[in-house]
Length: 212
Image (cartoon, rainbow, N blue to C red; front, side, top):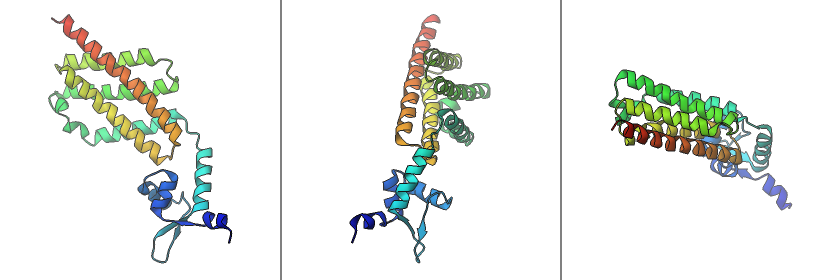
């Protein structure tokens, strides 16, 4: 018997298919339910996958999905806005200490971070230094204006940054973005937001000295 043929026709469980594709089993289940991934059902109702079909699907998907970062970021921002609208800010101690006007200003400040990252991605980092400085300055001056400590100023920024990172993980996972492309985006996000955080702390320190 041809061992190569046996291997190609091998049946895989949902978890085995997930391991082969490098994604979570729930993602494979979602793709199957949407009809995007070729799947078969046993008489008992369990999902089974042919190894050769999964290999061909993965290869075709990777070759056909040259995803533009700008388009991905549009989806990320939609996800971030939904997260913030669901009241996650209400669990943040620094946010609860602000009045309504200050809260509205911080929500605007959060959007500037996401749009700044889009600019960074679209220009391939050409405007990184000035963009990061401007956003860091905005976060610092806003925190200082509303009497937040430098620790809470950093917490506020990290809240929005983490919401952004979580959204990228979700959007990229749902789109089955190749691991290399995902790693590149994470590198860009961390490089850009690290520069913003440094600018924020430096600006806050300068504002504090100016008021002494």
